[in-house]
Length: 153
Length: 153
DNA sequence: GATGGCTTGATATTTTATTTCAATAAGGGC
DNA sequence: GCCCTTATTGAAATAAAATATCAAGCCATC
Ligand SMILES: [Zn+2]
Ligand SMILES: [Zn+2]
Ligand SMILES: [Zn+2]
Ligand SMILES: [Zn+2]
Image 1: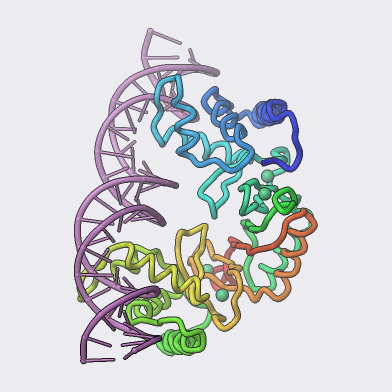
Image 2: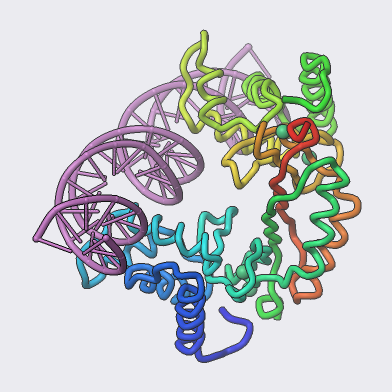
């Protein structure tokens, strides 16, 4: 469940439009398949698995095979429109695709809803921690499990 | 590759001994199978997959099936002797099994060696971040990718 | 309308993990 | 000791997640 009721169709549309725009700027190809997969990822507001996408994608139209979905997801992740949630083998739309970043998430263990954190603060802490341990920083995943405000009430 | 050359056999032995001791305190059963799996996890100083453990375990002695390995790993993780590295689908021995905690790791993208971070500092920051976002805190995974000191030289 | 690069289709396979039920081993009360 | 209960391991099958490989289609440019 979402923290706030909202017009999720509009939510999806916004995500598709900004992806469209970004691809034009970058001159990468936002093909119908990739659009459709992004739409399906956004269709649930919680993380979705590749095989769930596959099933939705195959509904009605011609069936597709796993590589089709994984390739589309690879593209969307590379462009920063989608993040992968490692601890759930699932995918989720990025709330801020204009700025490339790693996904830092909180995951509700009750409703499975995820919240992407604005990394501003944490990012520096994490990057410093890496350096203090002698590592150069490339990227990071942070997945915090807990119970969201909604589910605690 | 390890950051420091060290007597890794002693390293394994220490891990086994402290696991043994902790199990006695907790009155949990550190069976020969679980001992052997822990030993195998420690046998590489980098993360090892369940199926690599399976293969090593089956070497010489009678063959075992995947659930045997996964169940042993589940136990070792529950007791805090082993952590799972989500981004690698792999497992690694915990450097501080006496104190229960989530694994926070740096992973070298060159040599695959991992370093477990003492969470003291980061843990609080992460827990606070969760609370600021309205989540109660249960646990977290942090996996930082970068290049270790050794590999940069 | 041929060429070359990217994208998708199609098939098969690999890798990772779980379900289910049976057999065995350990611990507790008598 | 023996019976009973529970935890652990064995065994077979299957599920879930991801990738490898090669062929076909699309599209821009020459
Ligand atoms: Zn994002
Ligand atoms: Zn919730
Ligand atoms: Zn640890
Ligand atoms: Zn390294």
